[in-house]
Length: 193
Image 1: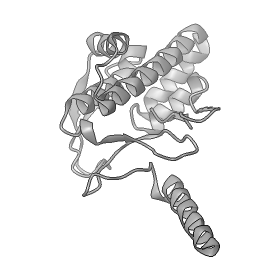
Image 2: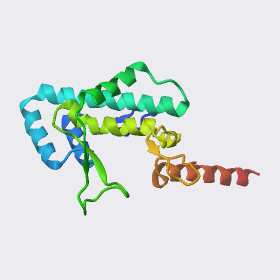
Image 3: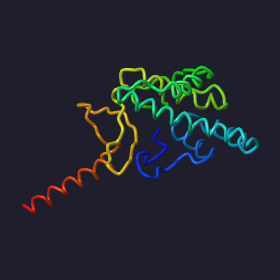
Image 4: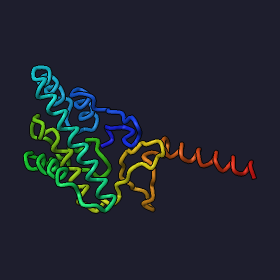
């Protein structure tokens, strides 16, 4: 969902501008392997229309997931259209769950990974859809937050803080700016007093 940066700002920044950017993101996020990426790049060079279709589907899924998570955070009923987008990809995919080999670098405690079973649009997006569906329906769903940065960051994150009170996507970025702004305002108020 965060591939649309500054989601709440006047001019959001699209980070998945084309099929090549999507493939790069899929590799960086470890959704597909570098070998799958090479196959996709070769195929997208030959079949530009299909590559464009996959890219558009990825953006549609991203926006549907963003709205589904926002509805969940706000305690609202999800949109039937957004549920349809997610459910269609889930229904049309053939997910495979694989045990990670010993020594494979993964998230702490992760021993299983959902792998795509092919290079079609639905198979490439299936791991994202399955992961999102698991999060939306799981115990951690209420820990999904949107960055409270006043400038419009809007990034979504999973609040894993002990007190479940994290407000910013990153303390090193949005959080520091907010704290610095509050400090500056307090300093100004104290000097005016």
